[in-house]
Structures are given as structure tokens and as C-alpha cells.
Image 1 (cartoon, one colour):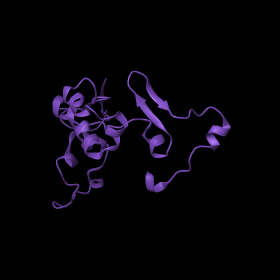
Image 2 (tube, rainbow, N blue to C red):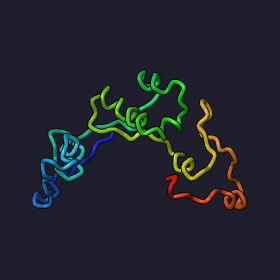
Image 3 (spheres, rainbow, N blue to C red):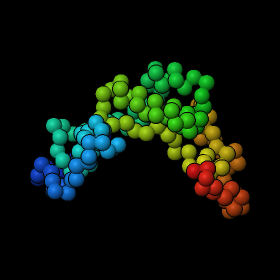
Length: 148
């Protein structure tokens, strides 16, 4: 699936130019990314084309992803900042798209909240102790903000 940002066709910019405050040259956010097609579209400016990225672009379809993930469980890959960053950037480099979809998994909040969950190959997410009753909900661990 290809996603793109759609900007209003009635004007070249839906944001008044006076609303955009340029960043000083030494500002850490004043980078190539700050003036990318995607960021400019978010600001309401029309670029030479609509920015493009692919949903679910990282993953098994990429040989470099499969190679990197050898011996690493899915959730461990998500929780390793260097690995998650690399996996996020792989399809951007390969397909020359304008943005990356951050590599993670929908069950990461459960894992961080202390719920025993794993992704089992060929099966999907599996809870160590399935939550089926009110008592199961009450038995869930309390959130530890430091773990998040």
C-alpha cells in the first residue's frame, strides 16, 4: 500500500508563510529531514510531488532484514534501539521513499507493562497468561513508569 500526504489543492500553502519560523542554522532540528517533502507537506506546503512511503515497508520481504534478524526474536528487535532504527531505515534506503515507518509491534506496550507476551513464528502474539476474566485483569501487573 502506498500512502501519501494530500494537501489542499486550492492554494499552494494552507499555512501562512508568517506562521513558519525558520530554525537557526545550528539548531539540532535544522537538518535535511526538517526540509523534507514529508515535513513540508505537514506544514501545509506543496512540494514538487506528494511525499511517499509504504505502510509495513520493513520486514520479511527485505533480505537485509532477514539477515539482521537471524537469531533475534521479534520483540527483542523492537526493543533494541539500534536494531529498530536500522530496520526502520532499510526500506527507506532500498526503495528511496520519503519517510520511514518506525519499526515496532503493537504488543510492545503490553511487554513494557510487564505482561508476558511473545511473538511466535507462524502463530503470532501469544500471551503467557491469557486475560479472559475480570480476575485476570485484576491480576495484571501495575504499570512501572520507569519501565516505559
